[in-house]
Length: 123
Image (cartoon, rainbow, N blue to C red):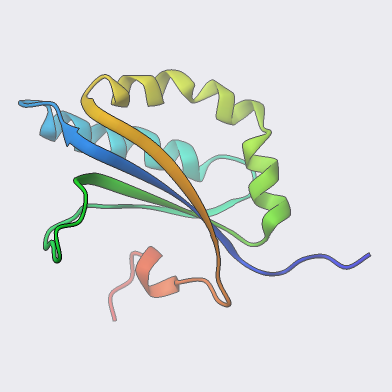
């Protein structure tokens, strides 16, 4: 049996707008609750929340994009099936309460992990 070694990234797009007056609370919740919670899930290598600053060519309103990196598809599947993920649901619902829009996911494969994009180190 061959073990897949292709890295995967699961991306969550928070498409819409944070409710008026809840911007700082939403960002704080994402950075201090959801990102660390996702990092602790089985199979997860790294997590980063991305915050749009410069928009070009009229993209949809994306309040936040969350990237979750995995070593392979099996690790992604393990995270999706985990009890720990189900236990995070109340924290996700709290963030949704601060948000007007929708959340969608796209799973990507990559030849190599985007280390520079997801690491805290500076070049």
